[in-house]
Amino acid sequence: MNPHPAARAEIVVDLDAVRHNVRRLREVAGVPTMTVVKADGYGHGMVEVARAAREAGAEWLGVATLDEAVALRAAGDRGRLLCWLAVPGEDFAAAIAADVDVTASSVAQLEEIAATGAAARVQLKVDTGLSRNGAPLDTWPEVVAAARAGEEVGRWRVTGIWSHFACSDEPDHPANDAQEAAFRHALDVADRAGLRPEVRHLSNSAGALLRPSSRFDLVRFGLASYGLDPAPGHTPDLDLIPAMTVRASLAMVKSIPAGAGVSYGHTWVADTATTLGLVPAGYGDGIPRHASNTAHVLVGGKRRALRGRVCMDQFVVDLDGDLPERGEDVVLFGPGTRGEPTAQDWAEAADTISYEIVTRIGGRMARRYVGR
Ligand SMILES: *Cc1c(COP(=O)(O)O)cnc(C)c1O
Image (tube, rainbow, N blue to C red; front, side, top):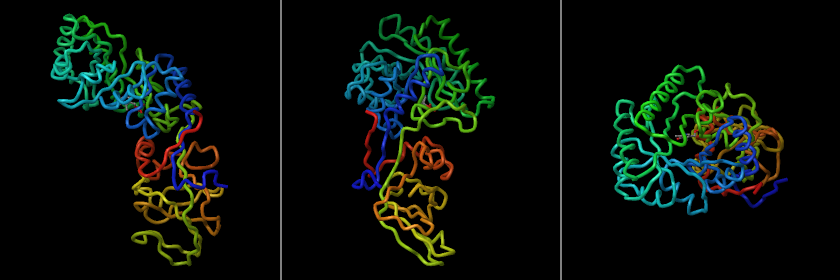
């Protein structure tokens, strides 16, 4: 029976699972932990996940944007909090006033922070090979010099130096050794310039789990905090629990004859008579259209194949002759303990990563929490 018959389609987030995962990851890493809650907590709810992570002992939280950091403070978070992505003209003053550690990747960004006139806590980001954010190594000495000069006049304190891996989900990729070596070099340059940061950090989930030498003083766990595997095929079993379940109620059940085409373009045609269930969620709710004809859901204790294209508001599954009632529970994905697919299964079906599955799901779906 469907325990929530009124809900058309919803996301159920298990905060006990988040707490369990954060505790497990802290144990495994053996160093202080930052739980990364950007992008609305990877689709799980930034504020709720942040609270659960703090309860489980996360010393730091991390977000991408200044806005996310300020929103976390407005929601009552008081612990150490780092953000790392800003464009010129953004409001560093608001984040600094909210006691957020901000990141600078260039002298120009340090100047923007200086222009606030506020006593900031600044972390410096160095690009060790991702070629994304962070100061390129050839500019690193001048960034470090400017940061030290600002520290000497009491403008700010440099609390951290950090970087980010490109290939940590491929532990044998040569870029990992190269990036760690470049990071150690960047730390030496900073040390010689007189910087004494509280925390040096390089690793995201996969780096922290698969590369102990890269843990330094702090690790940044995003995906693994939500119970998902950051490096499928490489990560040892850590007893993490996927925190997100997505479920819906069947909107319609019907029989079709052999030869009937299903959904737009008739990309699937029944070769024998069968029964279909209509799931009331589509790409407007973050269901990937690339999962058309490939993903599965759980209905009545069995995995059922998606048939035809995922539409904006709905998709169709093959009930293989079964005729459950309208309103029957459909589990799109969850921890996998009742036989339902996982976010990782959906990622493989849609040729993407579980990060994207959980972060994009939402749209018109309600979100509810268990394990508060
Ligand atoms: C998103 C992000 C993380 C977390 O990465 P996971 O792979 O989810 O653990 C860590 N650091 C930075 C800079 C990030 O942008």
